Image 1 (tube, rainbow, N blue to C red):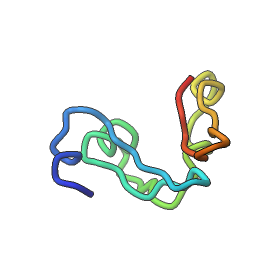
Image 2: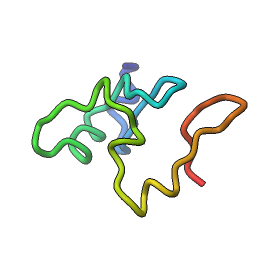
Image 3: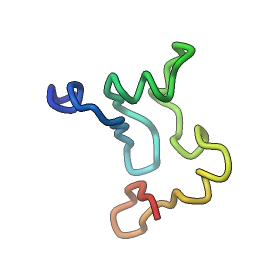
Length: 68
């Protein structure tokens, strides 16, 4: 991951076009993995319970996860 993402004071999670998590910065790991489990390789859609899941959709033109 690029150094500035790791140093950012925001949570950054990068997914591939199918939604598989491929990178997480330190802030994202602290927020999303407090128990230490690794989310790399899991699908971002499987990691979000409702109501967050209903806010996430896959954009058809780019297939990138977008928040509505």
